[in-house]
Structures are given as C-alpha cells and as structure tokens.
Image 1 (cartoon, helix red, strand yellow):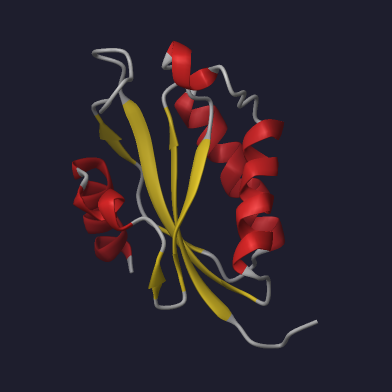
Image 2: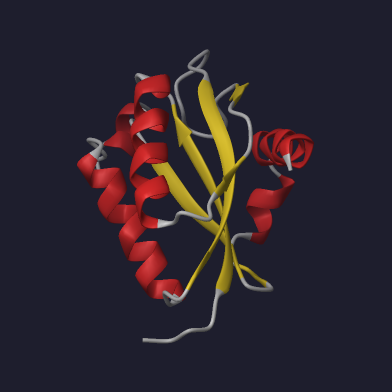
Length: 130
C-alpha cells in the first residue's frame, strides 16, 4: 500500500431527493476519508439534457488518499449505485447521486466541467468554507 497522499477534488450532485442523497454520500465518504473537507451545498439549475426546472444540489469536497485515481473513481461509482444511480438516469434526467472526480493531484480530469456554472458556484461556496 502506498503511503503517498494524493489530493482529490470531487463534485457531488443530486436532483432527486437531493438532501437525503447528499447526506448519505457525506456520511459514507466521511467514514472512508476522515480528512475530507466539505463545501456548502448550493442549488443550481439543471444543464444539458436534464429536465427543465429540475434543480440540483451540488457540493465540492476535497480529500487526501493513498488510493490510485482508478480506485477513487471506482469507489465513487459504487457509492452512486448504492444510492440508486442507474444507467437510465441520463435518459430520465433524474439523478439520485452523481460523484465526479474533478482533479487528482495536479491533474485536472474534467477541464470542461470547471467552465460550467454549477461547478463554479460550488467552488465559490467551497472557498468560502475553507
């Protein structure tokens, strides 16, 4: 097991029983990553193919881990599935839980996401709580 600590930045979102799913994700992630830091949850309008008027709650978190990037991504997908996420969610526009690994160490994994208003708003809320 590696003792190197990799810095990760996550964005967590939900538009279906959002408060419940964000709380469940927070509890799960807190138990796995005791050093996780959370930003305030922010309400944002849906973007892209989501249903019109269906608001999301989004939240940024940062953590350090010895896990590889692949291990972190797989863990996040497992947590999503345990919270009811299915492949059909993209078609329906209802997303119980979405956890994206935005950054792993200095590598920005989703550069286009940083241009999206919901990420920018969640990042501002994170900066205010740090």
